[in-house]
Every structure is written in C-alpha cells, then in structure tokens.
Amino acid sequence: MARIIDGKMISQQIKDECKEEVAVLTEQGKHICLAVVQVGADPASSIYVNNKKKACAYIGIESLAYELPEETTQEELLALVEELNEREDVNGILVQLPLPAHIDEDKVIQTISPLKDVDGFHPASVGAMCIGQPGFLSCTPAGIIQLLKRSDVEIEGKECVVIGRSNIVGKPMALLLLRENGTVTVCHSRTRNLKEVAKRADILIAAIGKPRMINHEYIKEGAVVIDVGIHRENGKMCGDVDFDDVVDHVSAITPVPGGVGPMTIAMLMRNCVESAKR
Amino acid sequence: MARIIDGKMISQQIKDECKEEVAVLTEQGKHICLAVVQVGADPASSIYVNNKKKACAYIGIESLAYELPEETTQEELLALVEELNEREDVNGILVQLPLPAHIDEDKVIQTISPLKDVDGFHPASVGAMCIGQPGFLSCTPAGIIQLLKRSDVEIEGKECVVIGRSNIVGKPMALLLLRENGTVTVCHSRTRNLKEVAKRADILIAAIGKPRMINHEYIKEGAVVIDVGIHRENGKMCGDVDFDDVVDHVSAITPVPGGVGPMTIAMLMRNCVESAKR
Image (tube, rainbow over all chains, first blue to last red; front, side, top):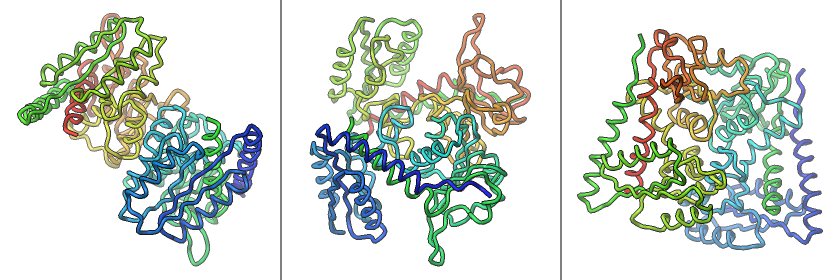
C-alpha cells in the first residue's frame, strides 16, 4: 500500500509558517494586503475566491475584495489593475480566472505589475522562473515541488514525466523539476506510446484533465505519482489518476481531494508574504 | 551515410527572404536599424559583432555600432540602452555578451525593452515564448527549428532529447520543440544513464559544451542529430558530437562548422525584420 502524500497537512504547515512570518512583519510595522478581483459570479470562482479570503484571514493578510459585475468592460478592469499596481498598500494582485469572454485574459495578466503578480502568470514571471531569476513562481507547480520535498522524495537525477503542457501547470512544472535537477520529459496529446513514456517515470505528474485516465498500465512499479486533476463524477471527486487501480502499485501518491489542491492557495499565501518582504 | 543538414545554405535562404522583405519595407518608406553594442575588445566578440554588421549590410538593415571601452561603467551602459529604447529610429538592440565582469549582464538584459529585444534574452521574451504569446524567440533554438523544418524533419510526436539546459539554448530549445508537438526530454549533468536516455531520441540536440562527447553509443540508429557545440581542437573546429564516429549511424546531422552556427545570425536578422514590421 502506497504512502499517501497529505497535501492538506503540508499546506497547513506552509500556511502556519506564513502566519509566523506575517506576525514578525506586522511587529515591524508592515501591513500585507492582497487585492482579489472577481468579474461576474461564476459559482466555482466564488468558492475559490472565498477560500483565498479565508486563507488570508487565517494568516493575517488583509484581503481587498473587488466583486465586479459580469458586464464590466476590459477598460474598466485594466484601469482597476493599474490603480492597484500604483497603490503602495497593495502587495499582491490576483484576478480570478476565467474572465468573461469579452475580456482578453492575456491582456489583463500582462497589465498586472510583475512585482505584484502573486499568481506568477505574467510573462515576465514565467520567463524569470525559466532562466532562474527571482520572481513569483506559479502556485500549483511550486506547491507540487513543496509536496515532494516535504515528503522526502528526492528529485535530483530522477526521471520525471509530466503529462500535460498547460501554461499554468505542465510547462512551469517541467521547468521547476529541471531546476531541482530532475531529468524531465513533457508528454501531451500528440505523444506516441504515452504508456511507455509515462512508465519511465520515477516521479509522474498527471495534469491531463481527463478523469481517472492514468491507471497502473502507465506507471512503473514503485513510482511516486502526483495527481493534478480535479473532477466530479457522480457526486464524487476524482483526479486524472485511477487512485484505486494504482494505489498498491506505487510507492507514494497524492489523493484527490486533499493532495495538490490545497497547495495552490498555500503557495499563493507564500507569494504574498514574499511580495511584502521585497 | 547520413544526410548533412546544410546550415550555411538554409541560413542563406532565410537571409535572402529577409532581404526581400526589407526591400518591400524600404519601398513603403520604412527604415530598419539594429543597434549593436560591444563593451571592450574581446576578439571573439569582435568577430561575432562584425558578422552581424555584415549580415545587416547584406539584408539592407542599418547597423549602428557602439564600441565602448572596457572600463565603461554599468550606469553608462544602462543609460545608453535606455536612450536606444527611446529612439524611434532603432528597431532592435543587441548587447554583445559576455560583458566585462564589473557589469551585471542580467541587469543589462532586463533593461532592454522587450519590444527591441531581438536576441530574445529578456525574461518577458522568454516567458512569452514559454506560454505561446508573441515575442522575440531566442535565435539559436529558433534557428534549429528552422533547420529541422526546412530539412523536412517532422517534429510532431517525435521523441526529442535535449542535452544541456542553458538559458540561451537548452531550455528555450525544449520549449520550442514542445510547441512543435514533440515529446521532449531535457538531460543535463545530473542525469543518470545519459546514454540510455539520449538513445531514446528520434531528434537529439547536443548542447553540452564538451568537444566530441556524443558518440554512437548515445544515439539510436537513424536518429537526426543537431550539434550546437563549437570548439576548436588542434586548430580544427568540432562540435559536441563526434561527427566521424556517428555519421554512418544517423539519418541526418548538422556539421560543425556550417550547421547551427550560421542560423543564429540569420534568425537575428529575422527578428530585426519582425521588429520593424510590428
């Protein structure tokens, strides 16, 4: 039976570390503030935004909530972002995605100052991460590195296979594993013999977006498996990995829920604290 | 016997295409200008700078040469870069690397406007490339993609292995091969069983920086091999690949000299033309 990598516990550790740092910063007279901007009232987005506000409250970060109507224009949103860029009392800016179809997400992300880009989505943040310069790391892949490190999974010299090449998970994940000296392969929908390639992995990151697609046929015996997927099937949550099928076959695995999910918010809090310290 | 991928010929094609485009732009009243900044008189740098000036002259791009003394301060260099950023008649800015030790290269690169960053080294350029947004592509890896495409080497679905993870070749190379739908693995000094990993490659990119290290033991029979190395041994040029040892074993290979080398300048010219068109 595999070791279960407990993302809930590890994310709690990180949030508690942030809380301690914030207490010290507060004593030094620093105030930390995250602006959270939501456009429209998508129910999933509202849940995410709410969880971020709760995490801020727990840690001692002020959250400034901007709940804009669905019909907000791109110009209005950009003007708000620019105002938040200027405000000295705002350390981080988070615009909840997805945005309504009439707004250009790329344009909005590019308008956020890289100095306040706590999501790590700005091209300058991505580029800095790629070439090893200081900057905010994309939260989900940075959280996965923490999951591995705090579970004593060695990355250096290991074969790491990332399935999926999205801008917010697959590609930054590959770059961060490379930074940790892993030998990194990125697979995707055009990969031939995906099972064979995935089976090389000592550490397999599944970020495909297909419920329970990855079964034991894709996994080398004893591999460590990180499941980035979040799906709801018949009222139950599941990931990209068929947990029950692989759990006796792997050495360690993240569950869904309670694996990668909670890490994203923890790393967002970490980025906010870093922003205040700079 | 392998097919020899002729970088000299392909780079000439690209330069001729640029020349035609520049002629059209000139007729439209546009003038294209590349500022080339060199600090000190490193002989290798002087040769590179000279070759770039010659390519500009061939294509019809004005080159503005700034030959600054070795003792130029960082502040002076940054002031020049900022002046060039502002000048409307300058489309591209190239600061020849390496810079003298008393100047912070990263700081200089970050000061070049991403709109004129024809080397593609600015973090915002690297990030844009990573997430598939418009921006200047790093010249050497972009040149390698052109070598493959113009030699009818299909990348999609192929196993591509990049040996080396530098900021100017290895990492951008991996991202561009991924964009072309290759299954991409990045190896480096900490990779275990490098021979075994390299042998998976349908397309092998050698960018290690060690003369003739890659022999037939690293290469699958029939693979396509791109040699990014440039070394001088006993007065003769060689690459990272032991050409004579592998030439009967591979299906296609770039020679050194005359392979990847000439592509870098051709792609720099391409970037200058793109910059003028924006």
